Structure formats: structure tokens, C-alpha cells
Length: 434
Image: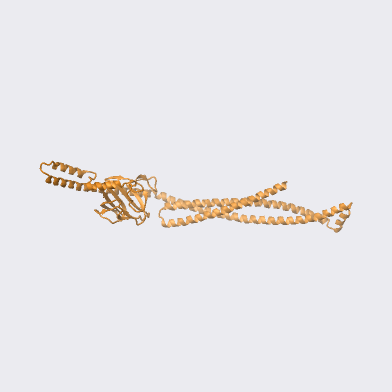
């Protein structure tokens, strides 16, 4: 019974070995996959180091690579553990075989000694002749035959056990070599991981060191943006004053012509009343629309939500109003319009028909165009070149310039604003499908 239980235990242990071999194969495949991903990340990191000036992007890829290396180390540790388990099971088999072989050798040695003592033919003959009867002699002859056969079987079993022991010892040697290789691989990866983390720390520290400088630059750009907004507002007010001056002059001339053409008994506004009305028009902070201007403004307003984008293709980079900075969340930026990222070399286009009231050059690489639509104004900033001039009439979707591509970031972004007189509106409510 104990032999049956022992055999059952050996079968279970063998099944366990097969299961562990399957696990080992899966882990080997997983390790190969992780190593491929590490190589891909390494290539991407090298490419980013060459092409990108932003340290942040390098840190993100570096962090991904560090995680993959940690997974690789973890997988190798699992492989080492499984191999240790296999080695433990094989060592148990070797111990069992050594014990069985020792017992067999002892039995065989005792048998040989006994056989040696009764080795002569005379002794065997006397053993048979000393039988009391024929049956006993027959049984003794059978015993001697079985004894010789058992000796032969014992010898064969000793040989088989020795060969089996050699096989298991060979397996153990291979496993020990494989385990040592895994341990060396793991140590190599640990050193590489330590180096990666040190590089990561250097990069992070460089960002921390430069963060104040970066934030200062962002704040400086915000101040420049506010200054540009103020300049645009001043130009809008000048455009309003100019439009109202022309409207006042037209009103004065019309009143004077009516007074000359009307009969003496016709009631017409006094000269003083005309002067007062003219002054009121000239001093208004909003455009006093003429009949034609009112039609344009009404048409513009009627197309709210259906106006085309100021570029053919694009996506919102920075929305209207106050919101956190895209990269530095602790900073709040205020946008009077919407920033739209588009393709390199993209053209800016008018979102509605109107008159160019101003072409503003803020720097050698930043020009803006302002278009009037009744009492509405649209402004297109961050143009590298323009194809219209002040006083030009433009139609919907007409090209007015080319959007500038930033040499540092590589981004092509246009800033677009809409205002009624000097009151800004959220462009997302005006542009189609924004």
C-alpha cells in the first residue's frame, strides 16, 4: 500500500513538472514580448531625444520604459522561482533514486556474498540430494532457479536506476546553468533599471529647476497677449469712432439737404437739433449702424452657429475664457478668443463677408487682420503673411493670409476672436460644429 501511495506521489510530482514547464514557456514568451516593447520604447526614446526639444515628452517615454523593465525583472524572477521548484522536485527524485539504489546494492551485495559461500557445484548438489523426498528436491531446484533469476533482475534494476539517476543529475546540471543565467540576466536588468531611474531623476530635476523660468516665460507671454488684446480693443474703438464720424457727417449732410429742398412751411429739425444728434452719433461707444450696416450685422447674427472655421482643418488647442494652462495646471490663462491648431502651411480665411479695417503687425512673425461686419468684428491673429489690405472688401471663406508655425514647438496655431463692438463672444457659439 505504501508503494502505491509513493507511486501516486511521483505521478503528481511529474504532472506538476509538466504544468510548470508549460508556465515556464508562457513566461518565456511574455518576457520576449516585454523585451520587444523595451526595444521599441528605446527606439522611440532615441527618436524623441533627436527631434523633440521638450524634456516632458522624454520623461513620459522614459517612465514607460522603466515600467517595462520592472515587468521584465518580475517575469525573470517568476521564471527563476519556477526553475527552483523544478530543481527541488528533481532533487527529490535524485534522493529517492539514491536511496533505492543503495538498498538494491546492499541486497545485491548480500546475495553475492551468499552466492559466493555456496558457489561450488558440490554444495548445490548436496543441497538437492539432502532433500527428504522428490517434492522437496523439486522445490529446492525451483528455489535455486528463482534465486538466480532474482539476482539477474536485481542487477538489471540496479543498472536502470543508475541510468535514471544519471538522467536526473544531467537535468539538474542544465537547470542550475539556466537558473544562473536567469540570475545574471536579472542582475543586468536591475543595473540597467537603476541607470534608467537615475536618468529619469536627472530629467525631472532639470524640469523642476527650469519650472520657474518656464512659468515666468508663460506669464510674460500672457502679458504680451493682454497687451495685444488692449491694442485690438483700441483699434476697434477707433474703427467705431471712424464709422460713427462718417455716419454723423452723412446725417448732417442729409439734414442740410432736406432743409434746402423742403418748402418754408414744412416742419424740419432745427440746426441745433441736427448738431446735437450728430454729436450723439460721434460720441457713441457703439457703432450707430446705417441701413446697409444693419443689414450686414443682421445677416452676420442670423448665421450664428453656422459660420465656417477660420481655417479649413483644425482642432481647438485653447478654449475661450479662463481655464488652466494645458501643461501647467496651476496656471490660469484668460483667452479672449479661441486658439485653433491646424496643419503647417494652412491659410487663414474670412468667416463672413466684410471690410478689412486694420492689418496689425505685432512682431516680424505675428500679424493680425481685423474685419468689420456691421457692428461685429472678427480678428485673425498669428499670421506669418497677409494677402489683404486695409479697406479691402472680403467674401466668406476668402484667404486673408497664412498661419504661422512656431519654430520652437512646431505647432501651427491661429487665434480667432469675435466681438460686437468691444464686447467679446465665445467663438464656439458662432462657428459651425465647434
